[in-house]
Image (cartoon, rainbow, N blue to C red):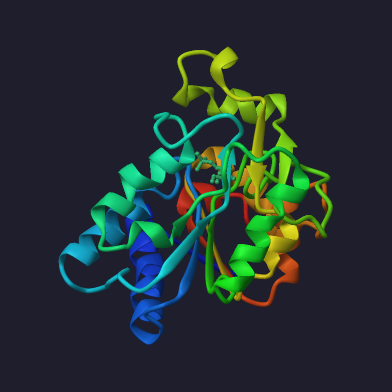
Length: 240
Ligand code: F6R
């Protein structure tokens, strides 16, 4: 794993450059995207660079990691709404090339069709990840099998608790989500993981310095050959 540490502004500038370089070399690249608080500063920077004419999303396609079960894109808490609002509406991407898993899949077989869609698009060139306090990536909670493809998950109490800040009460946080699996993520040719703030320091230490273990899903990224972690100093504080 390559680890880059700096201020949030510095590491976001470096991560953004990966998109500038990739889209210049391969305008029809396939991007894997994430939601949550962490990617917001990156998305703002990508929108700024696009407005400045330094990169274009016009030919690329995107696949988001996950979506809440039962929420459609008109729901402000849905990840489709998040993406439209924080990135897609601010760049020159073609909406029909943006993909977010459907929150209305009825079973795992239907959910797994998302992997087939990714494969048909040529596979993900660069997957963006945040990290949960328990090491989840996407909504792959601890003990998710290494071989998992896109599937429906029951969210843990800790993840629902962490995400309730976006809802008016805990009761409104959906109990289930659909997420790319660990295998889906590991198939990406390159992976960027962003983490900011001291709340992520402990899990970043386990991710980078612990033994790869499905108990800490992000630690499995050690087994991928091209992973870069972009950390602010607080998130990197416990690394030895
Ligand atoms: C979001 C996602 C999650 C988040 C993680 C961190 O699409 O897949 O794994 O990346 O929960 O969330 P934040 O960034 O809000 O701390």
